[in-house]
Image (tube, rainbow, N blue to C red; front, side, top):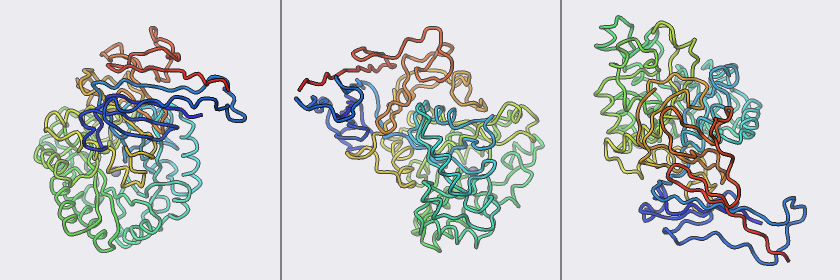
Amino acid sequence: MHTHMLFRGARIMGGPPELERGGDILVTDGAIAALGPSGSLKVPEPAAGRAAPAGCPEAPGQPESVTVDCTGLLAFPGFVDMHVHLRTPGHEHKEDLSSGLAAAAAGGFASVLAMPNTSPPVDGAAQVSDLLARAAKVRNGARLLQSACLTQGRKGESLCEYFEIREAGASAVTDDGGWVTDGAVMRRAIDYAAVCGLLPLTHPEDPTLSRGGSMHEGRVSTRLGLRGIPPQAEESAIYRDCALSLLTGNPVHVCHVSTAEGADLVRRFKAMGARVSCETAPHYLFLTHERVLGFDSHAKMNPPLRTERDREALRAALADGTVDAIATDHAPHSVLEKEVEFMDAACGITGLETAVPLALKLVRETGMPLARLASLMSLNPARLLGLPEPMKPGSPADLTLVDPDLEWTYLTEEGLSKSRNTPFEGWEFTGRAVMTVVGGEIRYRLVRPWRAGDGWLSDDPRPPARDRPSQPRPGASCPIGRLTLVLQLHARPTA
Ligand SMILES: [Zn+2]
């Protein structure tokens, strides 16, 4: 017996362009079975007279099929966030696998790549397998992709065992949080990672230039009397790693580009034929160093918020294809680490639950096509990390349904991350993810129009809200924002 899900009438992004006006997606047994124009696909009737498979525990009367009316919604290939910190192992008071993966799914991400700068760092195959096995048990969250350290203990000296790490299921190697200052070590890492099919990620920051700084070096840092981090700390590191990509002929991915010249370096090295890719984070597209006026530690991140000119240049680099991915750099911290003097506060903000609404805001402000957003948040990161090509028959059914018109207010107390360190608290948004499907399983859904102060989520792991209805039963129909989920039970014909 097969299980089927039919997503009917969504504007489908990231698939065949003709379906951007409207189409159906049929999912069978967790994989995309077919894509077609609106109204063209149906849930197959159960084959008459077929007996239940031997040992089938649910017989008789099986299996469920689900039809989701997606009128007014966008269907994206499941979003992939290639830069998150889930703080596991070692700092589970900030985030753990359950809370981090649930926050990811609630934000619309089907997969996230976790960074290995944990305590201890993830630098061996056994740790990778252990984390992936634990994450596989989180039923209401995104799929975990794990990266491992580029060098043992993140010390920047000897390379990890990439082949074993790859065999254990890792997708990338990085010493994120710090730069590999030894160029010869980085050169060998790029070559070894290419042989093993792992993507090397570089955190571009020359510590000899950034040390002691807590914000962008410029007019605002001078006014506030804070030591600054010059953009050249980032740009010189980007230059070296792009040059090493050109030298070796192998891929390098540059994390969280925050400056105009940094993006331009990637643009120029791409033009020279270097196999470089890069990401930027939503906060660099919306905030500048002016946000630090007032010493709000939620405006402290690494790399720091830059100038208006950098912000504009990054938006242009997204539009012209220089930037390959929008990644959150989700960096949860507890109140204790953030509510201190600016200079002592930890770097980073949470980002999983604000990335999609911010990206939709960017689309509204810049006129960027939605298909480009599908590339930035799904197709490109999936390709870079070696995932199956999404939104194609035969590929795993990873889907993000987005209501582009839903108006809501972001409040951290209603979020699923353990941490609340965000500069976007109270922002009013139009549009958000209303359903996240991972391998054909609904991992998140928003079950009624979300309003400030009384929102709740059906898959919220917190204690049940006062007025939360029970889960939909077969045959019932359940409002999901402007979307209706119809569960049907196909009775198995008696043989
Ligand atoms: Zn980093």
